[in-house]
Length: 221
Image (cartoon, rainbow, N blue to C red; front, side):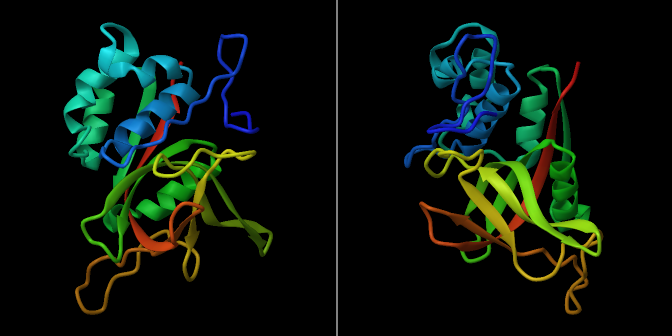
């Protein structure tokens, strides 16, 4: 990815193209927008074709619309998103983890530190019904005892404005201690206790969220 006045990616074309497409206030297609960004970054589809996927008859963009068009205004659950995405038959490897039971936070950070793209489902702590897809593109942190300890996830989020001179336009900042490899259990319920993150962007007030799902996406030969 190439940072500048707008984020671009290098393709076979002479000029770099923009992989970011912003979600509108009317649709619930954040999951589709994340897929469009993934396909643009991995150069499996042209951003111009993805922007007009509902009109396309052939190619990857048309296949994405056939698979996800019915979710444009209703949204899509994580397991369904993975199944539909995999059905496209693209050279991508998808690895999914769900809810605190799968230590989703620890897996997401590990994958990001390995350089993978990770699609995330955020679940609002305050508004229980609010769930949102976003794309994690990196992680930040500090060196503690000669080890890098990540505490911030960098996001390319379709819900806010495109990034300027950066590869991200939002972030998740860890609240509290480091992410445990195994989620702690609640003393009252015995269930895994979710890790709380603070979502931050220029377009929205900071909000506490939990990770409901993480899907690593890797290009295969």
